[in-house]
Image (cartoon, rainbow, N blue to C red; front, side, top):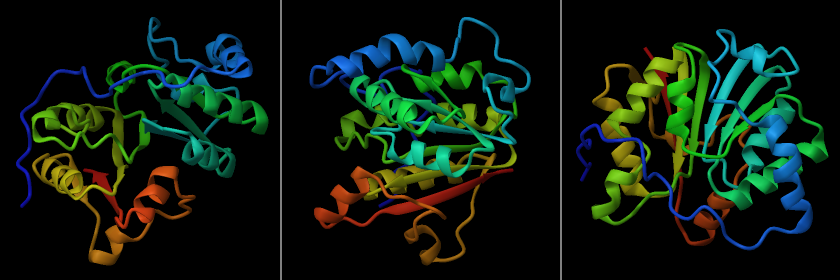
Length: 233
């Protein structure tokens, strides 16, 4: 059964713990020395033209919320040097891992935020983002925790404000209840239209999809994934 959309809710409590294993010395150094050079400064107004955030001059801007180990984000950034990427991840160990990959690859088209994505969404100028990616977010599987799922009327309202007309919201998950939850919320929101024409459209990974550790784990455990694309009206 498809879950009904949850009412608009506040902006906190989308993630649990923020740190796992102790950081290695090199990882701690990167967070101290490299992350500040890549981090968004939300204390200052966002530039009207987000391309100004980057040392390159990107033609498109893409936001990935909760990038986990960063394998998808770094793959896309290296593959698409003319796109500027904003990555948001509150988990310290994941941030340290991605910063290390940015150092290794020399990618110059990534900016980062290490806290709540809602802070970034509220900071961004209207109609400034070409695509939002939410890939394998925490499903909060217990019903009493569903209010903590990132997809909500509150987050979709923010997406609608910052995503350009014709822009995309891409969602991937291996949890059926969260897939249904997302479909219900987007169907109830006037700004987003599901682009699928048939089942193959949402069972087929996104173009250029590199795979992620979460997808690999789902396959090992016998779960298939859904790849949903919604277009901003």
